[in-house]
Length: 141
Length: 411
Image (tube, rainbow over all chains, first blue to last red; front, side, top):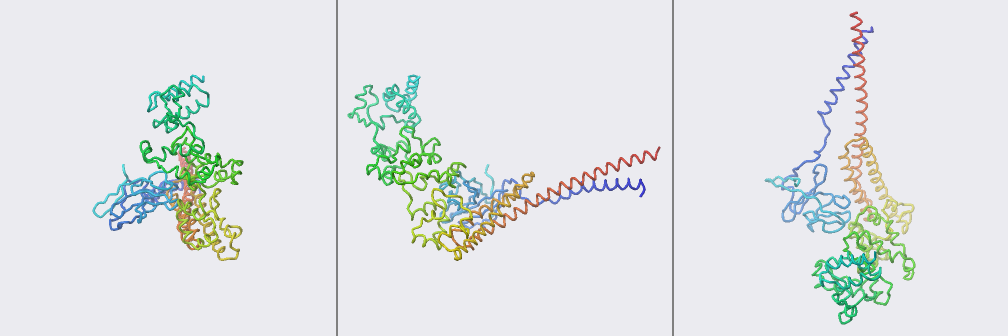
């Protein structure tokens, strides 16, 4: 290999490498990793048939768990599912029509107000919009 | 200085008086010694003062008269300072009367006096013991604040100190053959640390378990219900499990037998150790009960270790500035499983502990994998940056040499 060929090799290799360095991040950007939307304003949680009276389900609203409750009278409620005492996940107690935290027996009413036990604050409320059969949870203003 | 303070105190107190307009008690006592002035000063912040009551509302007498003989005469209903034995009835005059309490605080209970006489304090007082606590020992006499006020002696964070005034007095407690280390033990307990160090005012304090006005030690049969007020599943599992009957037969304190009472430590899996764990107090090492404890301990250790390892991985990733929100969510979810698996120990069934721990172990492994993968990618990006820099340098070098080569060819 003479001097000119060596210089061309360095130049070509460098150019190719630079091109690859530019193209690779673009390709990675085209295939982003699976991630939830960080801070949505609303989420669809299913149809009304998915929520018989006296039932509840927990969904991710962005990165926070939200409990969607259909009470015994058929009304919908959506509240943050994290207990305000020590961040345990709360659950709906159909028998007493309350939201209950199993960790330290904290109780909330269906408006999220802390009514008994150690929780120091109410649960945050979300709006539930029913459009036809579709149920959506919407961040309150 | 004292006289200036006396006049200021009189001015401060007099205009707030609901009735009468001129409070002769304050005017006269403000000119007396330091002890009188200290009472007037502390009473200026007392809840009773805030709702418009004055000295004569409790002590009787005629506060409009400047004649001490008349103002503090029996004819005017003057009671003066009650003795300790008289204090519960003295306070109960209003606090046990629904009609009176409705005027000031309709939601306040009116059973304090009744409850007091069901307490050990009240019973001893009735038996002639003047050393026991009465209303003023806990609430003070003239600086009474509502229980929700942080400056109140009965605000949750101040209760250990308030009870400790007597219950940490070794000499006084010795006269009742009682230990004086309860407050010290409580302070170091999981509940005491939650309240006093972490500021969790929901944490139980003396009166949560013993009652306040009706303070008594919870009985052997009641203690499970007392702890179960907060630890509902623990009580439920225990009562439904195989140990409850044996415990009752032997008159064991349901929770305190394993967890102690004032000195309740954060429970670790070591309680289930087959070597010197709590089960070994009754069961021999080769018994099926101790074997079951060993299995439960292994599962609790597995989830705890996995939980800690995941946290370490997440922290390592976060320290590199990586967004670990998803992994944190998984890790937070696993905490619930960790709680539940510890609670499930009270079923004394290893399969229940495994069932509760399983989702948590899975979530922590996933969180750990996610954090480790993020750190690996971070490393790859750094290597990639190095390679890209190398290629850029190579390109620059190639260009430089090429230009020189072309220039030398031309010349």
